[in-house]
Length: 634
Image (cartoon, helix red, strand yellow):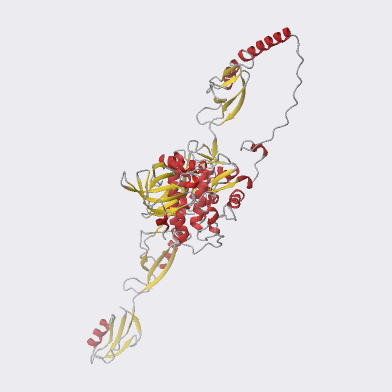
């Protein structure tokens, strides 16, 4: 019997509004149904949490976060969440209904995608993540199951259940119990229990690897083993599994999946720009190549790492360093308490009273006027170091100094303090003055000779951006390579400042000269001096003598790249004609015959009987058309 018919929710009205019509899919934490919103008369995808999970606070929190995170985003590539609520023991989300399939289903059916198809999926995913990152949201669970491919050709990101908002960071309430999909988790989530938008970039890099190769980069017997490999191994190059993949995409995957998050693009907007630059650099000839299968297809691990979220103990991966244990929630044994002091013997009552009074007076002085009294950190931002130190001294505080970079505060001036201004501190406390070193400067890397994609990568690593890109001809730099940058290499720029690039179009084309009427030797010499090759074809001519150029291809005024070939048509002189036999013919008839054959006629002799006695050249021989045939007449 059809599982849909057995599902008790099919045919039921949920929350007095959603009529459940059929079951679409069932996952590890929820079942998705096609339902009709009777209030707005539209079809929705109703995501209902499994009843046995409603008592798990982690899953319930994730379920509610999905609605809140998606509600903050209005983007064409994000699956919209319309409503969230409960009906008895049911917890549900009402979402945009999208006829189509998930990327996981497409990969399972087709294997690896072409480069063009992979980038057509990746770019809208990154566009959606860029909108989330700008809103301060990290998705936290990018994987093929959460990318919907609609029937009309769009790609949409779903399931913001692991998203975190506010500081745009991902954390775990209990780091030793991590919730996530092991095949796509960033290493820092596994080692430190905290990550930011760059964790989404890492997952997007794994997603691209899987689309290009048809397999995940790391496999293992269980989720913990897969996760450990993300921490200790670098993601292999996609071209190691599919030879047609160019270096630009190898580099893109390597940047996105760097183990050190500082080496990745800072957010999806930067990753999207790098993806588009790499797409421009990929040769058209490989965009639609579809490999039959990867060279080395790892054993499938979808039963362990693909699909639903996996919980596992991060302490099985690597024990945290001792200094981090307390910070990560581990219990650190306290030292043995000091032995209790002996009680003092009772003195006389008067002595006790005097002692109490003295103690009260001392305590009052300590907290009202002495070191135990409080003050507030004064405002010293913008002051010089000397003036700030004086202000802190007058407030009864001791200054310390730390130097920091600042884009807005001039060097030598105070950026701020730690604790910050207005903070309540005890008299005599130390307050650190953050003294500006001015803006942090980054040197322009050497870009000459690099491809545009390589130059953009180097600029991103140097915390700079690519500015305008101009193209020009150059005799010495290969087409597609950087001729120069502006500012030049070694220049110091502020973070994020643009660097303009000049890209070579290769040597300039050469205009073909008019060679007609020149001798063959002269024409070939002229072409050679221009850096062009020549090819010669012979052709007879009634007009031009032998050895003269009578035509050329391409014609004068066209352009060729250096080393191109010009075909010269060279005259071989008039065509050869067979001399007809006019011996014994009457003179007029013989002259007429020879002229019709294209010859001129010269008569010698006395012409007594008006007959041709002989001729030169001899009959049957070849002679140039237009040449003279001499007749001996009698």
